[in-house]
Image (tube, rainbow, N blue to C red):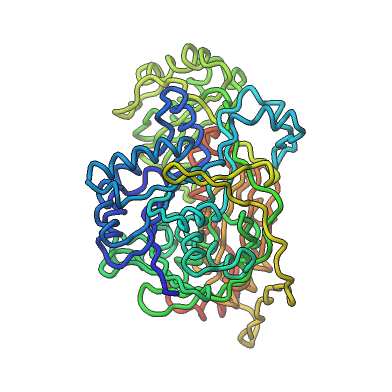
Length: 599
């Protein structure tokens, strides 16, 4: 068995279109993995397929593949992507046409993972007693069946491994987990058993670290000032070894940064419990050790895993009405007073806020995402008003026409952005997470004209002699003498990364020392976070401890205005929540701060 290099070249549909070419040309790569899908993406692709039977996949995949396919074939690089969306067979046909165009038809073998799309089977599933209840509300899917737009099951690595075993050098998937794209090459190359939970957990953790592209190589990093170059920002590489250890790095000469902290932040991104659930195993994020092994090299070891759940997660999207946004610029003196007056005038002109299912007002450059961090009044700001309603006509006929006239029909100093016309209603798509027994999801792999079913039921698994128990946080010795409290921003003490899952935001907080971590456990409580985010958080706050990373992860339920396209918030994905939490001023013993050295 050999070590392998797995290169990520995209974390979402719309990521840097040059990434695939730069990864292939930058150095050694054995597997090139691409992640395109999100909940909203599946609904969009499903609607595209209804309009055109040959559509429904991520067309950007073909654009990127055009730049790298000949090199991949010559160098033996295997491509794995979930670009198939809701029509992976059509994507397969498009790739085969591309290979023929390059004269590579005999050297490109395309494998397709299918079975995740259960949209056409929903009625039969419901009739047979599968209620597909919403994981958060407990409501059965039958109550909203008429509004369902797509339904896809998160599959694991097994069918990708089967496609590789059958000789595919381009594997196209529908809705597999993001981590499966990286885990599958490891299982295939290293021959890992289907119940070797620790090694499978290592592969899942590796996949989670690189699934968002440059978020682990310096992008979206708290200490962004440490990133020496943003030019040619390097996408991540995994140097994987048969024993389950791996190193996170990037190609030499690229911009960005790979450090214990950049990797730690990404591990916490969109994490719930440190017992990370996947179709392949439960990966214990609280088990790994991160070691800086040179510039831009972090080695990950010690991964522990457990058998996976008996069910698979289903991502269902449904129509939730319509929404529209109107934006006007207010400038000059008394900007905040004029902005509030402008908003009041506008709401009066459109019939009042109570006339719509949901409304929101935000002042960009002041409080659009979170309350202001300063008392200094801005000289200009953008007033955003937003509505959501089941009635498309109401939005287009009552709300939309009243925004632009306020430029000359309200307070002085108002204009509108150059690209802002009359607001129009756009469709709102909601997210419905559910569970389904593995036996109800027939998974198959298609290569050439052959089709084979793949087992999805997990093995019973080897007994674990000593179940994993995370080590408790060390209790550091504090300097002698009475405490000397000082006030500092939380960013002086911690790093943070935030993300979203539906209507729940997560904020992972990483202490800069073991002593600070003990302070975090005592001081930054769920109650502290709930109060700090009182303007957006409508549900409870949970805290999970991850002592191996000196971290805690907060789950802020009902904090994203419904999440995704349902939300009227300026930040419906929680991207800004970490930075806002780090801006909080806290009291701490000066000795603990002094131990951190210079900021």
